[in-house]
Image 1 (cartoon, one colour):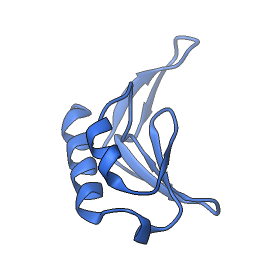
Image 2 (image 1 turned 135 degrees about the horizontal axis):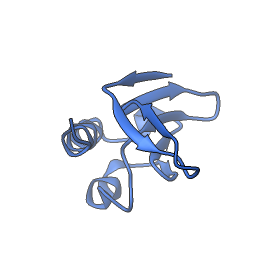
Image 3 (image 1 turned 60 degrees about the vertical axis):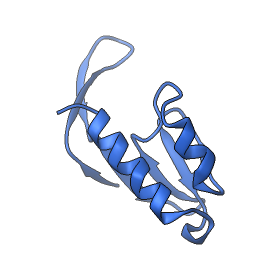
Image 4 (image 1 turned 120 degrees about the horizontal axis):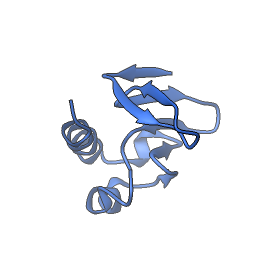
Length: 85
């Protein structure tokens, strides 16, 4: 995993933790991009992104050729700006 920035969060049991604001992991099944989809955010960009799936806060891409690089760039920029300082 590669992460950028830092963002605090509280776990379900009330413990304070810190996680990266945006990150990625090149996994066998797909490239996993963290911090790009929370609470239904960025649906307009995801609709234009190309072939992908999503999780709770992640975007999964099997092949970079399957997505629009400009839309992906905008998605990362927007997510970074909206994740706080």
